Image (cartoon, rainbow, N blue to C red; front, side, top):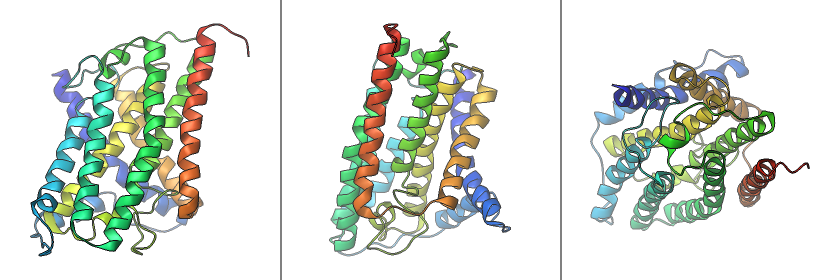
Length: 304
């Protein structure tokens, strides 16, 4: 029962975060905005449409969306919701989680290159670069969690409420902030990318999907929501472990924390120039290393 509830809550989080982002942007802009479930209506419309394929593409292009969403679903099944148990759990599963998402990125990059389009190849090159730059931050963040809790499995790390002192609690809040920053890169949001733009020269994730339509495009959208939900829930678990370690707190907190944060950033900040994105992502990795080092010193009871 707990595993089924955990899976349903992760799916609910994935479906709700885009709606919270849209409503936050509308509220801050002082306009009515689109309905909360408009993104679901759009995907439902795509699911009822057929797909059109270029004659230059191969079978790789056609199976890529299925592999992409399949990898996202598997990655989602690793994530616990506070005190609930995930469907998949084993020692070292956080490393498997990271490279399952890497598989999703790789297959979409290969599909973009399969079209033979210079625009999509350009987006694939950018995606590969940003993925390589953000991976150290992700692995260092996992190492920080493993160092605090002594486990390398999400289910074991978040198995129970942790008795951290004030200093380590602050570090856990910083880890949650780090995962939110990683979400901006992994989900292609402002300031790294803008899912609302349609100018090929500045798009990253969206330009890789220009040749997709219908049900294929719907699968890519759903997979993107699942990826965002994974990082949002990890961030919420890090906070809940030191504050209120229950699923009924972690779920709405993950939705509101990520949705409102992304909505506020997209309403108040402009998108980075492409030449500044690498600096932005490397800064996230540097922050991850700093948090890890700070946590290590605090565990040694060294006054700094």
